[in-house]
Image 1 (cartoon, rainbow, N blue to C red):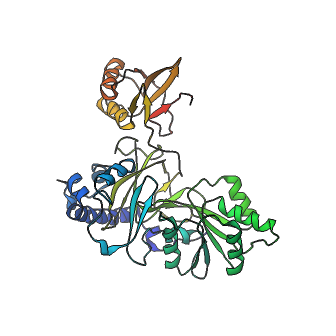
Image 2 (spheres, rainbow, N blue to C red):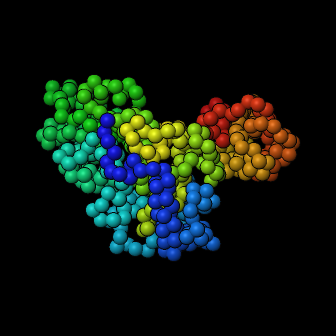
Length: 406
């Protein structure tokens, strides 16, 4: 198996937590002093007093779904960036639109080097990068990482399938980076031309599902494929090792799994929303809610890496829906649960003969009438409440389950 790339990947949990808390204290203090957003949202927070993950969990969550309006109100970055344009190397506009800066010149700013190394990509490899270099940062995220490992990079971008295959043959490409399906498209097109591409043996993929059958197809051609998970906002979050047993969290990301609609951390194994804190002093992300669902896996990676592992992508956390013409948000449902001390709830929305109805399922036992009153107050809609008694709700991260036919 591919070993850890540095000592940080195999350090003890206590040592890692101590380092992350030290980094947290530094970034919170800098963010309070240098950014308009955190100067307001973290007012009164004693940065020097942040010692544990419980302290972190008391800080407010910044939701990706709120960034668009926030950036429109305070362009370009919604008050999240420190006023230091000299530290920004590139500027991007991702779908939404959401603006993102690249901070640091010539560095692996998004930290994808660790994911590349985990699949065996390193000095001497010729990396064919099929992430887009246009408008969004995906292409540059991997380009800088590969360069930091001593690789030569071909900026293939998207499309142009025939030319991609020609370039792979001409340059002797050994590694591919891009979406899971595009490499197969390139290889099959080259096969049809009678000029197969045979040099690629390693691939790091992201931005789409890697189905088991697709991984097997690559394996039959001698190509090892592993996944990475990240976003333009926070960079690398987690990556597969060749153990293919979950996603190991990056050493420079502090990850929590919270109940959708809240900032409350859920027990390990329970599906919830991925929340990430990173430590860039120019563009700090403190408790950034990605909108993705996952869960913490038990134990450590078989390769010896000791950081927490995520169980892969389990769906989206933003389950907002419209009932009787009114939007209902996970945050509203979460407030109902919190008001009555209920650990887990699920709002089921159904329709019959053109009429919407809501049923709030609550784990355990309680006063259904009292909960229904709170539900009406929070959502401004009437709904019924039913406690499940000894039956547990499904562990799938759903707070709102819209069962109406589209």
